Length: 348
Image 1 (cartoon, rainbow, N blue to C red):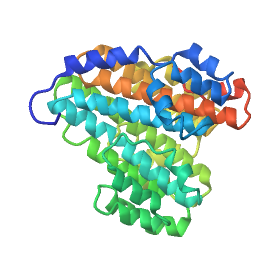
Image 2: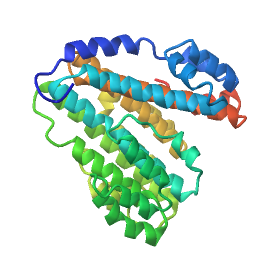
Image 3: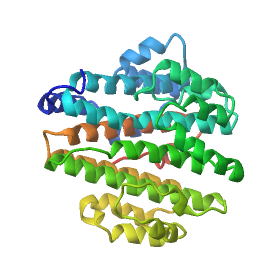
């Protein structure tokens, strides 16, 4: 399908809701935390991941098999949604799925920065965006941050990455590069969305996503110890922060959480947002904002049941399922206890 012609949200939403019913629930996650990687793979084989587990089982094993199966399934699920979609709905979904191009760029940059093996980087890539295999291969073969930037010169990420590269060289901190990627993605995503009521609600969700990304990135930068101004990495498009207020609040987690809890998101996000008050680390904060966004997406999916919002809600839920299973598999490989692993999961 393509962006030409009329939209078909009724059909796409019906297909997506059928798939949503197959997602893992809390009980499945608890079972997985008590399994070995081989047992997890067998469990996945009996679910919606069966085709990927069977196709990859002869080449991979253990946690690698789980990771490759997860990423392939995620990409195929989202490719299917695009194949069903038409017109404006296709365009909106395709633009949102480019978040995985941004994910892949940041994953490659981190891999080069830590001198990780190419195979270790590749297993973390999610081929659900716009980048083709040739682009992905060029990124994987890059042996320096500068080479990564060069491989992206003709994309929306090239110019902002080139601009941020000088500051990266000066500080040796990845935040300038990562935020350049995020800014490029959200600037494109938020442009020209439309003006009907469901789209305005979708735009409100995207602005919330930008707001929470700003909060998380500012905290990460502040805790990095680098002598830089958080306001310099502000992502335009949200409503909760200005550059100045973000720079002030980023230095104090308690004040930041209180500010968000007293904001326009308080009624919308309900109990999920209150978990921010109990967050005792940056990871806990990130997990709480993930849960809050999932709850927000679910709510919009019920308010406007025949629009893009139920589709985005499913995309978020599916992405979170994959991240949870990956966290379980990696936790088992690292020898963590079931309780320790469960604390790393994002469950609504």
